[in-house]
Image (cartoon, rainbow over all chains, first blue to last red; front, side, top):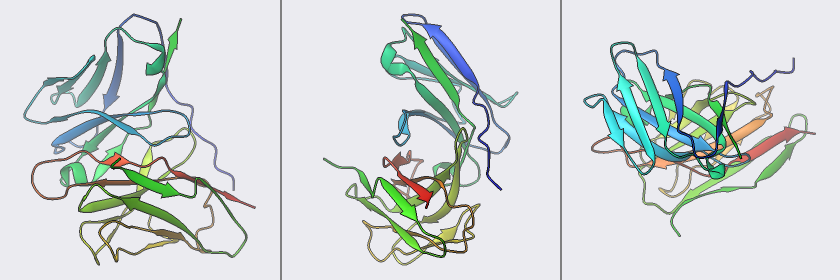
Length: 113
Length: 114
């Protein structure tokens, strides 16, 4: 039968505010984590990654935090801009690291003017 | 510019027909991947290839086939055995050896049934 898409979690923030997107992962043996941004009709775009031997990594306007105790990953975007509106995916690399990624469902981020 | 090129952007399949999606990369990456994305969902791995003339099944390989005759190319065939082929198909690539390297994606092919 016809498949029905799941309802994406959504987050709305005001332009200029900071946003935090959260992700829970399942495999305690995962040693690599990555965030992607996907705009409508396009492929995912790499944002930032982090290895399990780190708990924080910063990029340009973005920070990824990793809490291995509770298997939680977050992406912080500072001073959000309209161009940040997209769906954001986290992915974990289990035993295969970056080669065998398992993707989350995604979060739709909307920036309000 | 270096990157991953997927073609066509849109593709329509008739009942009982096989269709082939193209993926080419000029990044000199060793590994290539095919994912399927359904509306409102994450990506699921169909097939991947670490080196030329070798490939492995992913989580949802049934009804699909691939080949890797050249390092730059990793075409995906959606066969008539795939009963629900309507989806957005994404190709990715990265370096295989050494430390973890992020996968980089093309802009996808949207496949629909006529």
